[in-house]
Amino acid sequence: MNKIQKTISFFVAIALMASLFSYKSLEHGYKIGDEATDFELKNIDGNMVSLGQMKYSSAKGFIVVFTCNHCPFAKKYEDRIIALSKKYEPLGFPLVAINPNDVEQESEDSFENMQKRAKEKNYPFPYLIDETQVLTYTYGAAKTPHVYILKKENGKLKVAYIGAIDDNVQYADLVKEKHVEKAVDELIAGKPVTKAMTKAIGCTIKWKQ
Image: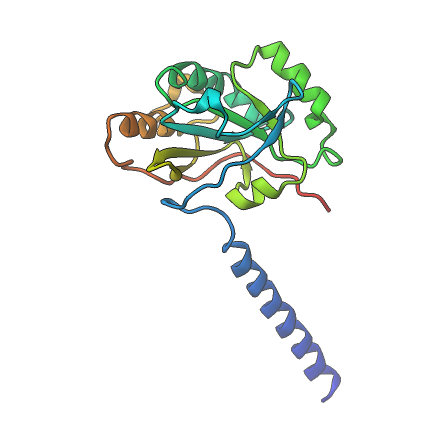
């Protein structure tokens, strides 16, 4: 085999490995209808929080939002996330926010800064940190913010919606489609979610190296 053939073979092998990696990366993460397992993560108050806790025993489902401090997209959506929590927790769909980022890469997302930000904005929901990033990988979250709506069904948590909060990151007053609100309203009404998936728009999650 001459040098040219060796070079071609090398790049073909690299291309195959890349395609296999891309395919494998699509295999993980929840799909609509999947059962979501419970988790236990540290809240900003230092306590561990899980969806199966007694305080959530009467919940009909959950709005799980992967978000963070530093991301400009997450900041744009911060007030809307707070509003979602205030609107839907009394209706049986409490919101739980999870910071998925590696704090070594983004110091603004450190636990201490999470506590500071939550206090400044008076978060009405738990703000948890996924220090190992195992939960984030399990869910398949890729952006901040990235929303997963879970509904209780026969004692299990089923994924009912995945994607964006709405259709306008920049201007809340110009939103035409409130994806999360529409999905939760349909679930509360006992209807199937008509638009179960949308494209999450935000910063990429910072994975551990």
